Length: 411
Image (tube, rainbow, N blue to C red; front, top):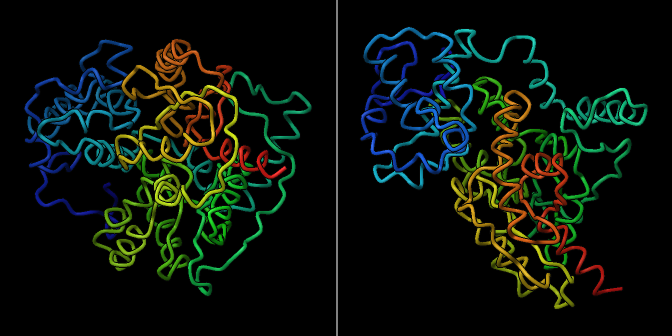
């Protein structure tokens, strides 16, 4: 990511162009095109400029050839979902995720992305009580039919939320873990956290939800290019989640970003602490996969379940097999989608700011879901779940099904 002044992450050697990108990273791409089939925007448009190869070509033309940063250039970067599906496919190891984040950050600095009227929405994410209050107001407005929820792709929001009660304190109790609850997920999908906490405790481990100790990881800010905001939130999390206890995360996007805190806080006084926290972050499925035998043996739920891999679990964290390992004993049948993990189009806030492309990308995922013939879909990322549910798909978090099976087994 790139920011202004002291907040800037300094690349090893930069081009000196208006985007300030790393020379070596730009040169790594050999334009082979193996990334194209894995890029959701290229798949639905066929536009070379909207592919990883094309976007890198645009970066090079701006940085090395002096091409102007016009609306076509900005659009090429604004329309990237940042799924990073291109990275595993790249034989040269091009760090495309870094390049696109740094590019977007520089465009934000120049006032070309994320206009100022949009920024208060990102600011709210770091103020947990305010976010909860505004979400409750939105829920009331939904009931009064004052909010076009279907058109906006909003779920039915809860008016009230019962508290998540800690069963242990990782700063005091040996073996206790943190459960990172985040911002939007805690406001809109707290029942998922409750289910996850139930499963962790069923494995014999006590839990403390982070709540407003660390109200947001900063992932949405990073994707938008709001580097100062993401660093501010990272510093808060690092300061408040001290110690050695694991930080378990049930959102793929949050987990990927928290694991990247060494980079997020590089070249700052919090760099070492950021790296230390990142080493303690574990996706909850990754953690449970090593403890699945500690969970009670119960009758599987009589459902056929399709697994949708969130991009940040599959392409970034690369721990998506853990979902199957944990879920398989608790459902009758698991089936795979045949789209090789292609992005669903959610992309954090992407479906809000690029709704047409997001819908077109989602259509491909919906076709794969239909071919799978499952009763429901599981997704370990709130954005993916909300985006698919808005199209009428029955979606659950994997650990909601595990918690449901455990509850049925103990009844």
